[in-house]
Length: 74
Image 1 (spheres, helix red, strand yellow):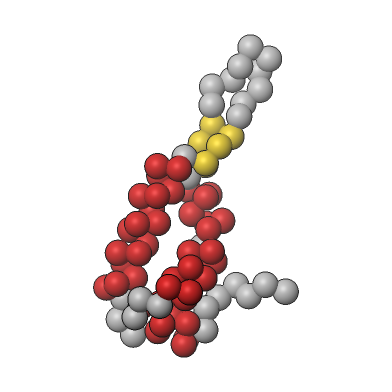
Image 2: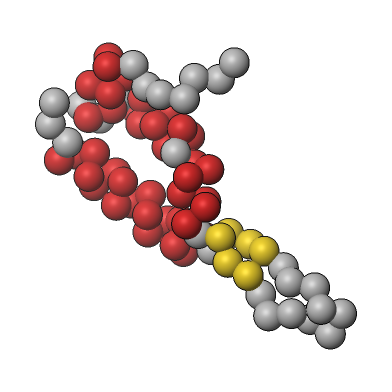
């Protein structure tokens, strides 16, 4: 079963800039970030709507998560 949280030690390492811990944090929140970046296209002639992840929004959110992580204090 996949863990749905980071341990206290991993959070401390991530705030200190440990690359592996930061990657784990971003992987943990990837689906959550994707939820907010989900976009739809206009219906086509057949009436189908396409869904996609807006990569610009995802990059913007990810960058801001990394910025907030630097400021995070325990």
